[in-house]
Image (cartoon, rainbow, N blue to C red; front, side, top):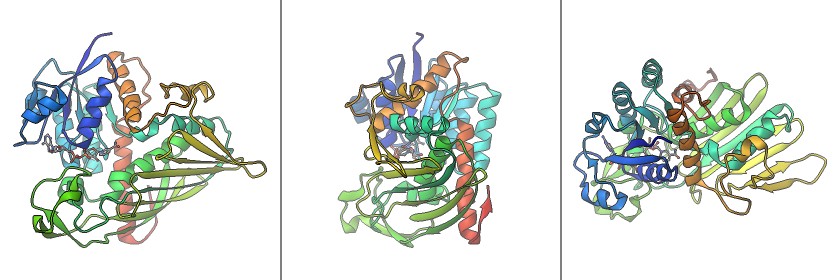
Length: 380
Ligand SMILES: NC(=O)c1ccc[n+]([C@@H]2O[C@H](COP(=O)([O-])OP(=O)(O)OC[C@H]3O[C@@H](n4cnc5c(N)ncnc54)[C@H](O)[C@@H]3O)[C@@H](O)[C@H]2O)c1
């Protein structure tokens, strides 16, 4: 198989996760990294084992030997970096939320399509094996008609007013914080699972901390717990800490989800429940190898990941036998594998989230804010 050269833009939480997952594919080499302007590149060269580390991401786009880029920078950088990469003829895998607005996301879809380049939005949570098993159960009609969907994505890392990250700032993150950051995953997931679109919604968003104490230095994701009080300055906040959203899917399905970054004790609690006329399903990202199946007239079940016992179409999303857990890192690897298969062979079917999915996500994020602002239902 022809080797593919890729570059990773952004060297924070996701930059590391992407680099490691790409390296597990086998036929894709991470040949370059772009760090933020001014960042010392020497420790990055050492820790990543990559010589080509630059503070100038645009320089990497001029290198004809680089075929693809991963965008792992704050949301405000996604559209400018993706559009420039697409203009330079690179395939692009971009983190979610895809952009700052649906207008930006639409430009990205249009340019990727025009230049005939492979494009993906990193909704990696789709790629846990038991999520794919649940999806196949729903598609096969095992649940009957889907009546109700419920869920949450709850975290606690922004509970205190001293907790800070670029996501707090609308200029770096976009207008919707918790809805864009983690609500985007939940809305993508529920549509992916059920095969139904969110057709209308009614949302209530809340900013609990109207001011926060910003650290005077920079803070990468999940690293802000070690600062002293004198290291902060107080600023006004305009991005939400919490949202609850009622949703309608398709013609008859009803549901609701909450998203929060201020729910003590929840580290990365992503859960969905799907209830049909025959049975129900529950899944929790923090126990990803298990799927609960609920029955009305017989004992409920918990089934565990085992590719030899899973739906055939889901088994290909598990690389390890039963009893060997597969988690967050593996979900990225599964998505990236499908993205790079498409780059290697343009006739490969698209079975990963594209920029169109990211655009749909941006549209829904905007609808959540519109609904909350109007205190009313909105059509999507
Ligand atoms: N799919 C997922 O599960 C998941 C999880 C977390 C974050 N994300 C997304 O990944 C993206 C990055 O989030 P993160 O948590 O890694 O943030 P982070 O703050 O940990 O890392 C961002 C990095 O980008 C760098 N950067 C900023 N501007 C840059 C520029 N112009 N050029 C090069 N580097 C630049 C920063 O220095 C930092 O190292 C966000 O869009 C976020 O929504 C996705």
